Image (tube, rainbow, N blue to C red):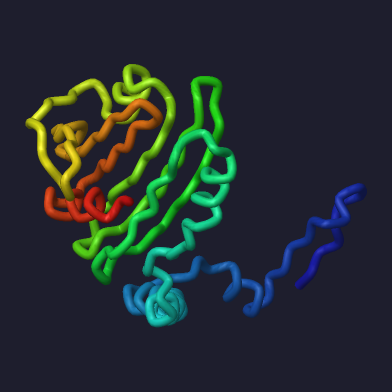
Length: 192
């Protein structure tokens, strides 16, 4: 039985029918209902993740560092060393040339064959300013090394990374990263 709403309250009404009482009861959810709901949500998510992985979504994006290196060469700030003859598995993932107040800097990031990140930095900025900024505060020299007939300084730097540094009158070259010393040496040796 339906009663008329009081004056001024047109949205209010009471319904005493069996159908209205059935809808008024609180719904009782079971664990089975919860599992079904989760499966309905997780199946499409699992499908999307599987497609993403099969399409190589987790693979690093490999770039061509040549434009940044050409830009650095065209600027004429310092002679640019291009790595040559690196073994298979070296993947360039970033490259940037930038002029700053103190000079120019070229950065090229690589993933090594072992999957570690290594960065090649070339700059004509004063080594006294460049090295502390790039190597960090906790630098520990580990000695001089000869790589491809050139003298380099070896350092242990932040977070267990290593660095090889070669300074000259017109530029400083830094090879820094978490790769093993053999990988850092390979990159350093590949520089012309």
